Image (spheres, one colour):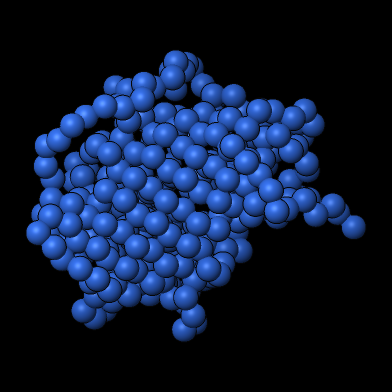
Length: 278
């Protein structure tokens, strides 16, 4: 793998080691497990390596085991079907001989058709908001060891140490910090990386407990791509959580580009457990 000064591009730059078998790497950063959006993006990238002339319109994934950031991930692609208009791929992510993640994705030949969409809600422009790093500094929280390759600017952030419950709604602006180019597939994979960054937070906002008393993890993740977009520009991520029960929070998201086009939709169920200290 050739490294560049663009972390997100490096994450998506998988190494082919055999037919339909690829290897991905994790950037060095704090944390004992791999960020879920990274595995989603790399698995979708692996699937795209076996596709020509078609774009992903939907993907569904399960997180099976925590990923170990100290070792590479193998991605095995199964070419499930190639039809006249649609192709289906399955991808299994493996570490230490065990599945840590699997994904099913469907790809379609681009075509014209009926169109309608929900309208984007009113929101302050991202230029008027603080990003996550600035919010941490304002709250006196130590900075992370390095910035994430996707910048997030919350519209109504839940501040560090806040004890008041909030509605299960969470809107943020987000974008790649550096351009990933103009290729539609690469921009989809970059958006997939960012789509896991704030989604489960919607289900936590009604339940403010100290961070050290929370056990959280993404359990599954689904994305539908409606329209191509440039993820180096700002996107509005409108998120809500209609239900939490059984130690799980269910979350939904609508992703609009800066022009108000609905470019993608997301759903996720996440593990959210309150484990009091001591």
